[in-house]
Amino acid sequence: MSGAKRCPICRVPLEFSRENTWNSDGTITQTRNPDHRVIFYEAEGMKKLLSNLEALLGVPVDRIAIEGKRKSTYHYLEGMFSGPKLALIKAFLRRKVYETISARGAILGYGHFELVDVKAGKYIKVFGRNIYSLTLFSGDLAAVFNRVEGLPAELHLEEKDGGYLITVTPGPEVEEEIASRLERVVVPRKPGNISYRLCPNCRVPEEIAGFVWDMEAGTITDPSTGRHMAVLGAEGIDSVFRELEAELGEEIPRSIVEAQRQYAMETLHRREVERSPDYLTRQIALRGMGNLVHFNLTREGVRAEVENAVPPLLVAGMIQGIFDLVSGGASTCDFQRGSDGTLQVEIKAR
Ligand SMILES: [Zn+2]
Image (cartoon, rainbow, N blue to C red):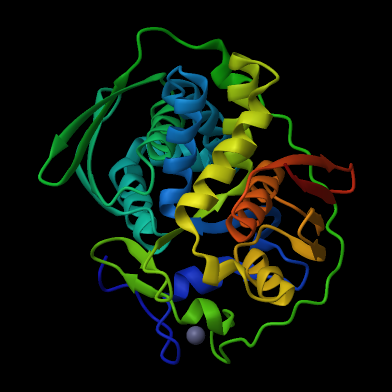
């Protein structure tokens, strides 16, 4: 795994630069599958978001979040492995598939993984360190087991050697919903004019080329903040949010914005956010979260417009967090995402 091929010029693993495309409209898309958007996001971000949410609601959210992620990953895997390909995997390549998925994790910043053991139809055991989010990873692993073994999954996590040993075994009953499909809504993207200086060889933006891939640890570090980053599927996050809303009620989107505001307050530094709107536009675009086309900051509040905003709740919460950080006070947040994918955010000082 540590021998992954890197770009001779910028040292980014080639598989990473091949798979992800930064576009001028503030989005990052999978190169082979431009309908699939990803965000390049702080690995701690989802972890802290979920723990903030749990504290706000006073109920555990982990199981629900795992289920949301599982559904989305399962849906994605259905597209990748079906028919003869799936049959081939089941017959011969099972171990190889689990190993490939483990190795890919390091390139995307998910952590260091080892396939410890696998027995067809019985279990898989995976050891992981620096896991970007135990919750999201558990959802992923359950989905892989569902798809490859054709069985419902039960997870058992055990702390070990500075990481986790995760065992997946068949769940107690066949869940009907495994077969149910997720509704996928692809919102056409609005064009933008964000330009990046690209590596002449592998074509990642130079800001991204400055990040540090530790292939043994499975981490990607932003050298300007020291924070770990990971590539997250936008649909997976939406699916987690949908599941939370379906299970816990319609107030959940507000709570997610609040949890994200808290995360931004805890994590960002004033010096990061006090720069020009251009800087913010760039930071949001480099994360693939959209194109900040309008940002008006006054003492009274912020009015912002983000085209192609994904995930809208995180973008809104982040803008509110930025305002609170700069103003040093509290605020209210109104947001609305139009059917064209444009997010309007209005923050008012309280
Ligand atoms: Zn390069």
